[in-house]
Length: 138
Picture (tube, rainbow, N blue to C red):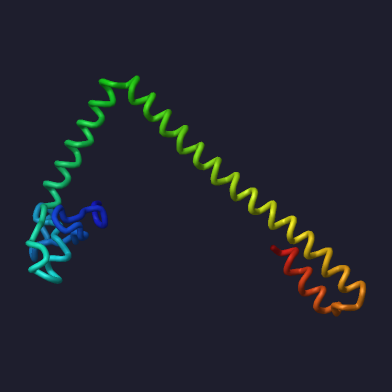
């Protein structure tokens, strides 16, 4: 459940999941990946999976209890966070829309140019077809 989410407190390396030879679930653990590569850079750090589960459950219970006791503050804070995130998404979407609109205008200009070049005989029909299909697809 925690694979890829557990990191060594000292060196910051990922902690790898492991188990003992008897494969008992209560013996499963996470240990520092750097320690196995270079024992001088990080001492062995490990935590049993069962201990980690209890710690995470306890933390979830404390956070939930805090939310229940401070519901109005939590709702307000989360609302503000969601508003900030949606504002950022709107700004990103607007910038993308502006870029796309500029590109569409440029493609229209290019299409008119190749049409004129084809009509004037400066661009073969095959080349015009190829370029117009490319612009149309974009």
